[in-house]
Every structure is written in C-alpha cells, then in structure tokens.
Amino acid sequence: MEGGLGGATPDEAFEVRCDRSTMSQNDLDAGRLIARITVLPVAAIERITVVLALTAAGQIVGDIREVA
Image (cartoon, rainbow, N blue to C red; front, side):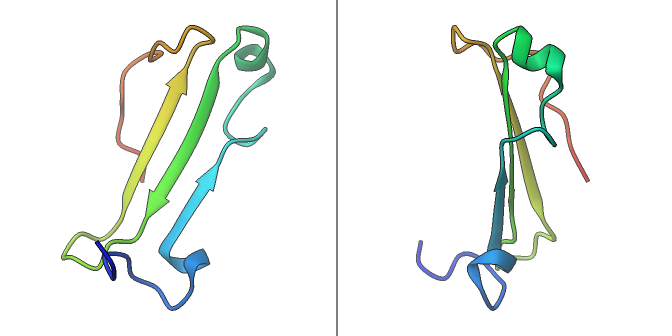
C-alpha cells in the first residue's frame, strides 16, 4: 500500500538490521540468522518490530517476542 509508512524519509519509515548487533558468535556458529525489522506505520500504531531468527534449515528458533 503506497503511503502506508510514516516518516519524512525511508530511514525514518523503516529499518532492517541483520548483522553483529542482532546475532552473537554463538548464533553464527549454530547457523542462525536473526534479522530485526522495524516499521513506522501511518496508522494509529506507534511502531512495529519483527525479529526473525532462522536456522540454516529455515526453521524459526525460539519464541516470537515483542521488542520495544
């Protein structure tokens, strides 16, 4: 949906991180990928953050949790 994200620039509208700030050495050694995706929707929701934690086999690791 066009115009669904807030912010004056893309940097303000969303952020995707998948680096050493989202994964420990243990995660890397175990073949886990953890990506943190944050969006700023225009709707009456303050902010949404999705954290994906995947193994090399593509399985979700652990519980999905809310991140403030």
